[in-house]
Length: 532
Image (cartoon, rainbow, N blue to C red):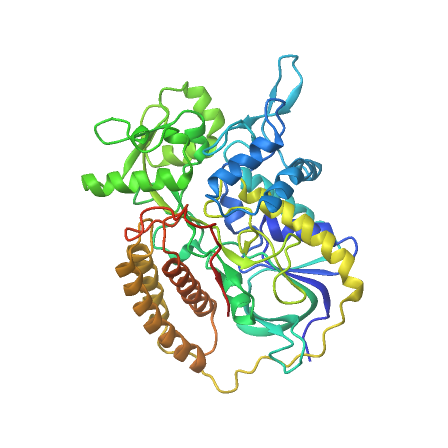
């Protein structure tokens, strides 16, 4: 029998997507939220830029839609894009009602209004932000409300081992019934039962050696949804953020796109600008173009980094608009009001993921996917800046409305078998996990990074096949640990990225290959969909 009562909804993940969904449901049903570490830790906390919404009279919904479609390089679903853009204003209002302290300014009449900034790919100022730490402001506000809500039960330091489905238990109909979950503090696997399960675990950029993401971004939800039988799509489209701080003491610290939005220039060591050679939009080109341009110059010149320079703006402007970045750089003896910032590209965002419809439903009955873990059709082949937090909010709203309508028809899950570890032992070779983790992330960076080729992808596939075999053997013999679960999930994510990249015989959006450097315009573009 299960160790916990039956939940109406089990939400796996506690970022903007997971907590928004929980808060939209908890007045009407019993909700559990699982977090792999502490509740606030995740990509949302570190999101700097902001959230897109058409709030300026000079802007329009059609303009936001068109900018998103342009960035997506022909693979966005136009209906999904329209849905998200049209829901943006309501979602900003929903966050304001929950006390998110967005940055404001005074208009010409002295009235207070939200300050809007501009980022790459946008034709207008439409990015609502909380200085340069928007994600932190959103996460802290949502966490506060979630902790206070009596309808939400929170489980920190709980890492999902696998979803439990009816098919795995021998039932004819495929449906999610709950999850096996490792209580990291007690080192014990528990059984959670739920009528509905929502995956909101974020992205998978820790599959790469260099990333802007925190350590928890190991693609868990993509991997365990895949193992459960859900399709995934467009995993070849990994967004590399152009400007991660380059410093031996600064791990995974992002220099927000808003710095370029407010006039920051990318420079070579001799002080010369170069972005105009690659795109007429220069520093405001979409991220894939900027990242490839920086990568090209680094390899061409044999240098470790380029510079991002905003010293031409007033010092007070820089300090007030980018306080977090300013302070972080200052601690590393970089005064961004006087000195350019050394930057390199780093893996940042997973545009593909678990395939969903416009209500966040996956292939498996009762299983939803919300946020970066999902492939909704919004981003296509390249995500436009600050559409990511917006996607979390809109699809949390969509999922909540769908769950509220459908829950009365959802049966209670049956009693579930307990996790069986009678045939395993404690590992005496933990070094295997750390060694495989390091090897995987290195060959993914070298062979499946910003610029790919058939030969590089073949090398990567040979290595992932060997690693998967080692990990499967290890997993079968020893008790699970959080590190082992993450490694197992990363190996699946790596394989999905490699398989997807191998299937695409063109360069499009974030996927660039030396063997097919042009976009194939001879036929309508298609998504890369993988079947379990």
